Amino acid sequence: MEKTTKSFPISHVIGFFMSLLLTFGAAWVALQTSLPMNTIIWIIGSLAVTQAALQLYMFMHMNEGEDKAALTINILYAAFIAVVIVAGSIWVMFSGHSH
Amino acid sequence: MSAKIDTALPLEYQTEQNRMNILGFWIFLGAEIVLFATLFGVYGVLGHRHAGGPMQQDLFIIKDVMIQTMLLLTSSFTMGIAIFEMRRHQLKGMLVWLVITLLLGGGFLYMEIQEFTHYVHQGATMQTSAFLSSFFVLLGTHGLHVTLGIGWAVLLIIQLLQRGLTPVTARKTFIIGLYWHFLDVVWIFIFTFVYLAGLVS
Image 1 (spheres, each protein chain N blue to C red):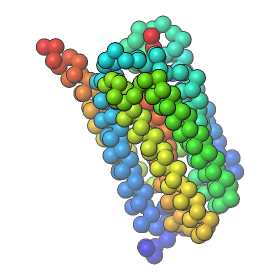
Image 2 (cartoon, one colour):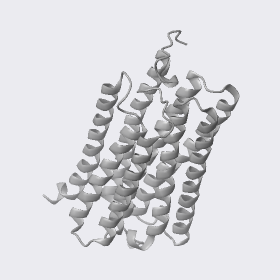
Image 3 (cartoon, chains in turn blue, orange):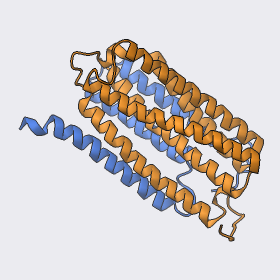
Image 4 (cartoon, rainbow over the protein chains, first blue to last red):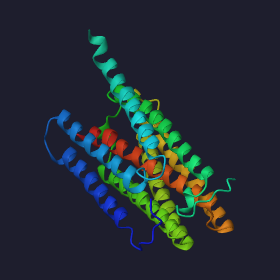
């Protein structure tokens, strides 16, 4: 966490271009390739997670301040709960009742 | 208000109160992640139940989705620049970038409302199918957050004009910045798992 004296926000510009790259990359994989559905979902899902991490670090300054460890644990825990809710719901509803 | 001011830090972190407010907002964002996760879970379960109504491929127009995505992505970037200007103590630059952010956010909202009215005119309403119920609830909740964010930022801009850049207004701006970036993060997942996944043939 520095008191910014630089006059050009280089890390923001890099973050923005990487976000654009990941967005168009995901659109290309989903719409222009003929990979199996599951493969596409895994690839574009990974690109989305990468882009979310990019936002957290390059725009939201998650890696600064005296509470950065608490912040990281908080967000990782929320992400864990999110995965459990989404993947758990889908798993229970689609494979749970076929047995 | 805490009297201990640490001027070695950026304005928004200078008081204990500010640091606690920012930490508290991160914890709120953790809860927001879980809120959106429940809605994504519902969409993941019900997204294939079309009940004879339109399917994702019949409704989604990739060009419009890309424009919405660009508007929100760019607005997240310009919000980042506003915070960058704030750390350089450039109130004027900060206000300019905040206004640009709000215009981009307003453009996104306009596109989304157009999209929803278009769907409804095609007979694809919330009552049509489980897919559309879960779709409108997930996207509507996100759109509502964007709307609230715009209203909140307008109030903040008024306060910045009245009071200038102080540790309190800097902290408020930083927090609204976090909120705005978070909405972009949620949109990345909507773009990926609702639109792109729905358009994979």
